[in-house]
Length: 275
Image (cartoon, one colour):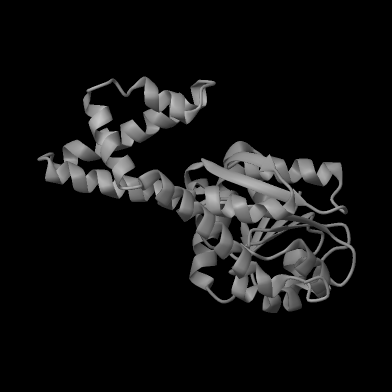
């Protein structure tokens, strides 16, 4: 199934790597192009043995899936360049934050199958939490192809398009929140006298273990937290500080604001007739 990536950054590479490793796509069926970075294309060609180039007509000819992986600010310019060469029955997948399905349909200028997605950077290690939304022109076969592609880089959920801003705030930006917590743990480890080479693997395993516990049990995070918080113990002492500093509410506010920012970023791509 010929699949063309327009844009060849880190997310495109993660998807290419995952799709080849899982067998979702054959390397010989993958084509990639970008705005002007020939060295980047050569690197991808060398590592993954895919096709690369700049002839848009040949890149898109007979493509069953076209993945729009450029930056959102380049969306309109890119659509102007590609719309004349889009095969009528192809599936368009967009990875661009804030860029609506309606915008893609208007730019193409005819009915077309579109999947809007929100992966996160953990796709690079096959652990993305991805949400996708589809329009009415996407066939069941195309939907299954999109799910197979995204499942090759992690977990995938189908949501309504209006929920994608919330997904962006929660899991799209989510890895950064966890890294922020890890930063604090590293700083604390230094303050309490642990060397970096000792602390880092302990922090990593703690985060991995907590995630695995959340995955393996039916209980809520609150129940798991209470289960390790003995009265008068060390965990209770630490949690008391987090509560006094309003850390939980700060994280809630963080996700709400990230969601609001996703909505603001999407405003330029909304149909002025409807908004």
